[in-house]
Image 1: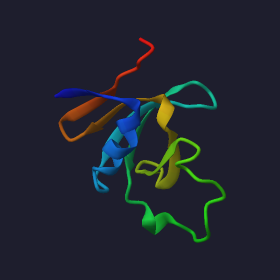
Image 2: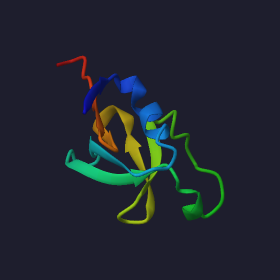
Image 3: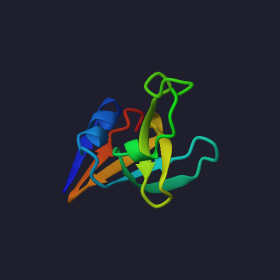
Image 4: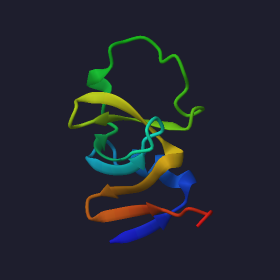
Length: 97
């Protein structure tokens, strides 16, 4: 099933999965390459300590665990194309289209 969401709903949609596996399709900022990441918001066991040097929220990022690489990653919210959780795919409505 597919549902269209606004860009402002992406972070809440990812966080609402409560650590379950999600697939996030986005475009990497550094290279412009499309990427499909199998991710989870449950990354506490990977934290090494200390405070982040930046605010992910202020930078427009959502922090997740890359389940394939077992590493913490940040996804730019403005480049997310879709989020799939269970049988539901949330497609970001781009107001410029």
